[in-house]
Image (cartoon, rainbow, N blue to C red; front, side, top):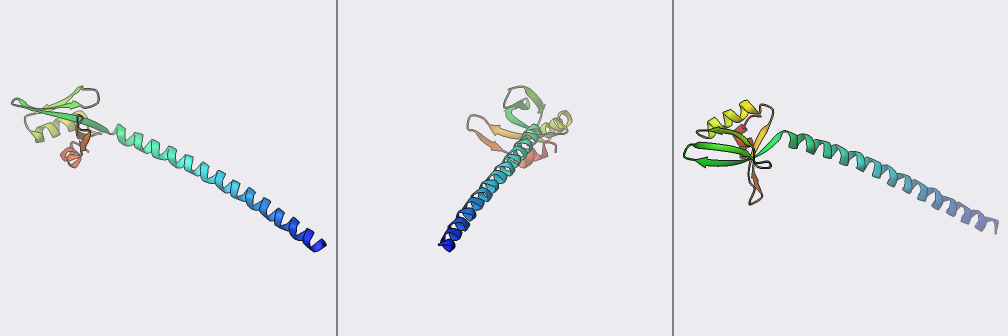
Length: 117
């Protein structure tokens, strides 16, 4: 009888300790997940801050680039190479990404032919 009682107490204690440990592991995993999610959010923000989404208009007078989000004029050039150079002069620390807003499709165009790294 004492043996069964000791066995039941031991099993109950083991289950309690195991449950507490699993709860602790769950808490630690949740904390780590939150830290990683915050880091991913910060990284995504940093990347987006280095990008300008561009809508390009090709007219007989040349090529005109506009911010696809705000519609603001960004730069112009007689051809793609000049447009690229002018973008780089105006935004030396940013990359341009050509988009087609009406279709929701983005084209990196080799980071817009390196529209300035």
